[in-house]
Length: 178
Image 1 (cartoon, rainbow, N blue to C red):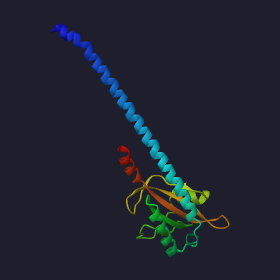
Image 2 (image 1 turned 135 degrees about the horizontal axis):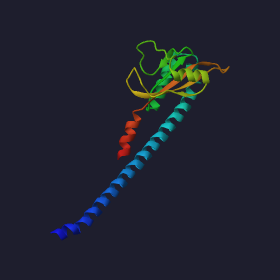
Image 3 (image 1 turned 90 degrees about the vertical axis):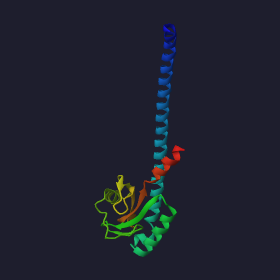
């Protein structure tokens, strides 16, 4: 019996070593897969942000938005929102931050003058992105992207903005698992 136990010791050691190697390989594979998914999600988000910039540049030149025509602006932005379902909201605000047009329902006068993305877009005269935030109106996780509404003289008359709904990441992860 003692000889059998002694003979099994190298086999047991080999099994433990093989199991440890397989565990380490599985950990490395999981790490590589996670890194790949993170890079893929980041690239996807970057494309969405670049697309949003193009959309906002175009929207900033729409006469209904430049002239703060609320009804025409709302009609136009709702049509844009139907074509871009990854966005939760589109809107426009005047130079003082008063939102005059927004696809989400407004229950009270809304002013975004204190928002960093608004201030940065006005001061830089260029595209800006907010930090991750929760929309107080619909409790969705999002980032807000903004672009100034520039008049003929180059003066910023306000900003046009889009709120990117971050729930697409959840769908991305569900698809990536399969």
